[in-house]
Length: 364
Image (cartoon, rainbow, N blue to C red; front, side):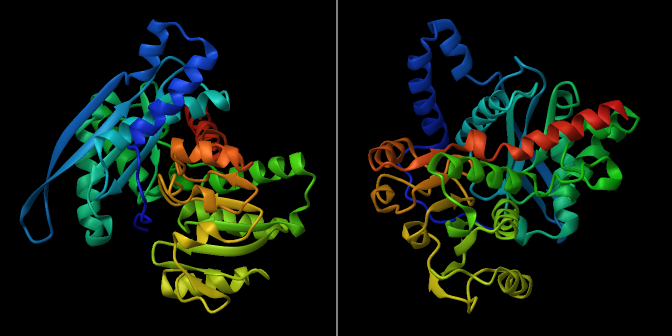
């Protein structure tokens, strides 16, 4: 799924830094610790030569940023997108450090990315890009150094290629070198839906604060990739009323509730939420401003900004995506009384189960 159109005010790294600065002041961090935590431990930039199916040689720019190894190996996903930037990867790596600390697992933060459009690449081209990228960063990753995982446009198959390439270079199988793998290669049951399930748990806990019941709680989910689709399925099964869903192509809104099994059947055929006949068609950005109790942005960064934050009608905002809300928007939401469950808690289910997978592989 491609990125949802956004109105960016700050870059991903700038947004992270602005939030960190606020937290640092409240915590009274000394200058030395402040500088240490605000700066990545290591940034790796590589240029990957790959022979395409046409026989032509192409070069892809790629990154791996390791923000912190203070609590253990660094941990974070690898994303494939034409919109990947070093600034974005740098900011998301820091967010991973905070996320792992919030749920108290012994990892630091990392993130990786390759500038490419996977939707325009063959399976063979994706495999060659992945294996060459792995070879280029081989000296900096591993079970005790840095453990990659799936992210935007990457999946179990990509993790299998990384694990296999890493294992070939060290001459023995190292299942703990990545997480989010297929089950038969040392993956963990529940990893695929873990982030979406974490969003469900976050919603449940937020409802407790407002003494609300699931059945009377209307939910809108922006994004229908792994996180969004799993959150929709799990929240529907738990009894929430899903009234709106959107992906990059468009969305659907029905204040009486959507037929979720029919929606999944439609997406299975059409490969998009757009065109589903169970409600009113709506844009992926406009859906954020519709009536609901819970809004769950699960698409991409910076979709809620100072331009639209005042029009958010939800009482509870659960950040399923990484950094979906800009710092200026945070202030507006606070003024309007919107209760925000931040991304470093709301979407931490994925890295939590990744930790379980890593431990299982180390002990196997």
